[in-house]
Length: 527
Image (cartoon, rainbow, N blue to C red; front, side, top):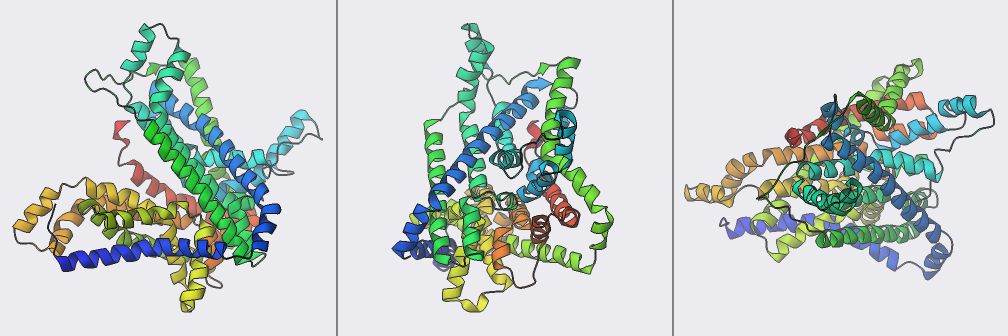
């Protein structure tokens, strides 16, 4: 462990403490506001809105998890255990839905499955003029949209676990007379459970915190209700109460996931390790597997992108490609750049101190920064809004408030890359630099930062990509007349101006693709 001068150490710790306070203070403030609310407000919410909102949120999360599990585990199994033409292409392509924001997918499905839409017209040709397909604004419709948007989380983690799976366990079960189905249920799935549970936790947190899809599809969840209380009712106390319930719900999911992870520790022996062999498929099996993957990817990414391209080339869409539109592009790019840069600058001291000086203070500051995980967009916006109005009202209505909300919400995404990058660098390299006469700051600048450059880039890209797609905090906190691409998609799609929303939506997707490729290139060599 390197020796750091007291002055340098104190300055870093001050930065770390300030960063942790940036995340925790809004959460503490919003909790205090909720607890100090009039009991009549609590009673009104508990007797009217809360039971319905809790049921809608929890039932939607459970339904989406079931759909995402089926899609994610089955696709991961196909691309890792079967050998057929085009397998490598499908292996990468199945991650593309991560570049599709949920509010974009929601508005595309609203057109496809809505009343009088092309899918309903086709269904009426087959089943009669009175036939109706399920509405995208129903529980089933929202579940399908969210499931298609989130299954890549489970797919990625399950695929990684299957690639490192020791097939010897399955062979032992087979020699004991277990059938293929029994081997999957009794051996394979239990060994994959830690990865699957981690993917399920990501899906649940994503669904619980999502605003774009549920708002466009008019499905009442806690996140959507917080936004409605702030904008429609102008009731910050009721919004804070619903926010605290949402945070508690997210915390329960996180604690449950951690408990399952501790109870599901499986170690695969290295002495008799054997990698799984892929099953070679005949032409009929190849056609079936390819058709299944094409249907899933087409619904989650292919068809929406094709529609966005067609709409973007329409005369109505081409008319809006003027200086005002490129102003939206500029606003989105500047906000995302500032937020990503601020997130990396704030996250670096937190990750560095927790890795190199793991005291209770440094570790506590890092864990406090992860509190942003349980702050959905509207909750983070409400917390920053109330805090700024009461403490620093001069910054309200400026871009600075947006940057604070973005960093508060997306800092954990950057820390997930920064922390492992620093931990992978042996402290011996820094100790050698110190013995050669470099100061602590020179060592960090000349040795540590160049070695963790890739981790910094990935952290910056993650925050940039998330900020480009962020919707609820921008809706609530943006300066007057300051619109981004995500805002334009939401505003136009809310009025069902699909062609006008298409250029902004398509640009958001296209910006996300290179970032997604950069992230995949880090660990895709195992394919």
